[in-house]
Amino acid sequence: MDLTEMELKANFRNLQNLKGFLKIRNSSLTNLEFFESLETSECGDDGFVIANNPELIGIKFLKFFRTDEKCIWHITNNSKLDISKCRDLPVSSDFESFGNLRDCECYNLRISPESLPYYTNCETISGGYQGVLEIRNLSDSMDLSKFSSLKEVLGRIEVSGTQLTNLSFMGNLENLIVDINQNYGHLSIHNNPNLKVLGWNSLKKLTPIAQRFDLIITNNHPEFCLSTQEAQMFAEISAMFFNEDKILLCPELSRTDGVKVCKIENLEEDCHHVVGDVIIDQNNEMDVRKFKNVTHIYGNLVVRDTKELVDLSFLSNLQNVIRLTKDDDQIIRIISNKKLAIVEFPNMKVPPFPYLRDVSFLEIRDNSQEIFKIQRDCLLIQAKTKTPIKYNGMGCSKLPGKKRNSNGAIYDYYDEDSSNVHFGFTFILLPVVIFHM
Image 1: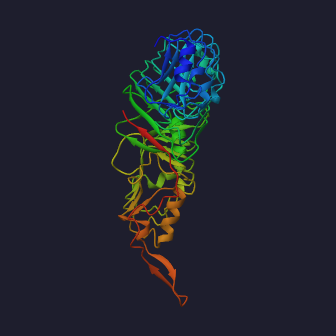
Image 2: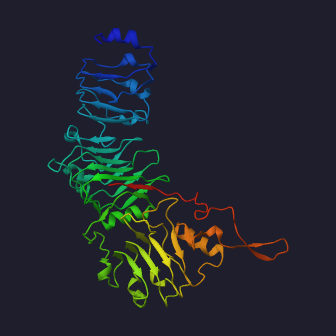
Image 3: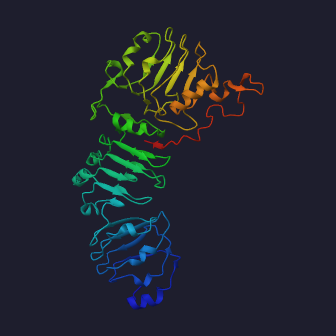
């Protein structure tokens, strides 16, 4: 459209809603005041664009302008435009800005080979519903040293379509805090064919503000792995996790926090983290004292076919059980023990990782002793571990409870209307973690 600014103002000054796409690029316009009444427009496939306008200095109308929340705004390469007050733009906007006179630094960053030269040394990055930090099409040969200053991201991170082998250039990242409104994967790492590790052992705090944390890892290198520190971090937020294929645990067991990690075949009494399936049976039940300091198990926990074991006190310090490989069996199984009468995990405050809602449970069956005599005993362990229990094929709700009748007498009752296994966990707020390979 080849019109003067005066003609544009005459034609568009009363326009409020544009039933079409808006792109302003390669023009000699100095301002966009002719859109002063514009409130909304539709979004094209490549978003809302203001790009390559060398004389443009004014875009005040954007303070009142809206697109749908999935629309990406591209405000780039306008050499006289100051976009530094980007936080005044509508909260629904997701945008990138680079190559302007002043850009929106450390806010809604989309890092690509084109925008990378304009990236500043951010310690904290924040943003809107969809934005915050997206990294695309980068490789190890590029200078990523400026990211070494990054310590906190207040929102989602997405890394996709790169040739990177690791993400250790963000190796000083300590905090990732996400809002439930930031959808589409709070941490999404996909389609990076060379990516083998994260390199984020520096991560200290992973905080979903609301009840979800979606972690998507898919189509990276077949040998992609998580360190014990990274896996522990995801497990501590009670992550719900869908694993369609194997996710490896990195072979390097040393940790930056100094916690001792042992493989199960070389377990020592001062180990806090154990890698491998822990299987207690009649062949090793007299040697369980070596587990007394264990807080985390990376594998299955199975107690089965013991003859003399009466309780699980040797696991009193256990906080979580983490299994990254896909398996149809439950992560924790207590099966066919002769004298075992007490099952408690006093320090386990979160479900085993991964937790699959409506699928995961703590399995206790075919033991000779009656471990749960009444419903309350079962519910207590269920509440403490935040994990549904399936006891001899039934949920806690199917066990006898205690009630007092009108005469004051106590009697057993069964809640026949409750769910078989998942008896009412609507009060538990669990993040979601999704892994695919």
